[in-house]
Image 1 (cartoon, rainbow, N blue to C red):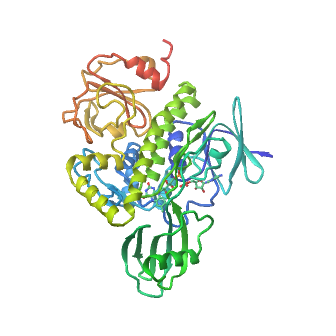
Image 2: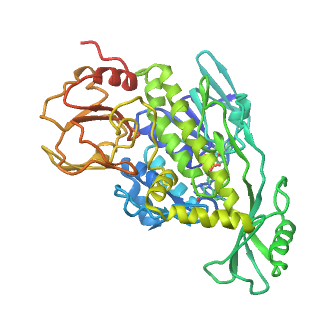
Length: 491
Ligand SMILES: Cc1cc2nc3c(=O)[nH]c(=O)nc-3n(C[C@H](O)[C@H](O)[C@H](O)COP(=O)(O)OP(=O)(O)OC[C@H]3O[C@@H](n4cnc5c(N)ncnc54)[C@H](O)[C@@H]3O)c2cc1C
């Protein structure tokens, strides 16, 4: 077996999750490489249609949101099984989502990762691995191997890493199977959406007017293997009574509502993120968003463990924080699948849900969940900011005006002192944590919760979540700094 050079972290899979994680690790100075079986950053077919507000915020925290905003169309994308949820009154700079096809999101992420100098071993597949006490031996197709301290499986729903690690993937088998395709039709079809007891189906005219986008559910959910033109024709006939002379497919793909989640996101030196850790039906559009946010939660923690700043136990907080977030998405997705169908009872339920979601409080709660803005990591009792996303406030510092998110561009922790300048001293952590004195005159408002009391200081993790809130004293600050960013440096 030919031994290629080693890396501190090897990521299997260069989809959105793997790319985001690679960027986070590279920013933290970690030697990271991606192994990707595809030759280029090209997706056959169409997958994610956009980004939710929290993902745009997360990208803004790294200073790259503008690249995505320039390529897509900002609009209200949040919804619950197609019931639109407007978030334009939410207290965030990004009170909208972004319509942007996954291939463009991946292209932009790949460009960022390349600027950060991350090597990508393309057209190579991870075929297996072995763990020993000191790390992982990663086996690649073509008889090559790589050595790493940690291996992260970002290799999608059929994750080889998850299976080879022996991590259980409990959940539910599919009840719906859908075909997605770009085709030509010989006859003018009935464009638009149709619902029946099997799901929601749509025929849409594509840019050139000659081609059509199709999404149609199949009668039988247990299909396996590559979908064919015959499968598509049968599914069209079952819904519209004709296949409109479907021919010349550019691509056909199949997805189901199989709903499963890894029982553990870590086994020794092997971790899982993104679809490798959780799969669900695309309704609600959250899979890619979840994966990117898994990566942002894991990146700085893994970096600190690799560079020896923090104990390995910090990695346990990755599962503890992200597993419940995905479990909630899986649950909400299963509820939405019911509403994609149509019969008199489901229609009555949909009408009831629509009515409920037109009321302010339910709209805000569900929209905050769907847009990812209400994520709350359980960091104990205390100020409502604890464990929640830090708002992107307009600060004033000695150096001039400054946005909070700008302070997070290099993915390092920040202690924001909003009381008397010089009131906080964190000399033993000064090599790891940036202390910024600032003032902020406005309100503190969180999605759903509304206005909260202004804190005197906040400790912000690199992922943008608040790890400690100060009320004018340093009570608990050394503990929070030690928990998240390692033991104090010796004097
Ligand atoms: C029809 C459809 C619509 C969707 N719409 C949305 C949406 O609107 N919003 C949303 O957020 N999500 C949506 N999703 C989900 C989204 O596409 C996925 O959640 C997202 O792609 C997951 O990213 P990932 O990087 O975790 O995995 P993937 O995108 O699956 O990437 C995995 C990568 O790993 C590579 N790989 C696999 N095995 C190996 C191996 N052994 N060695 C090396 N490389 C390997 C693959 O080639 C691939 O590049 C949709 C999905 C579908 C099917």
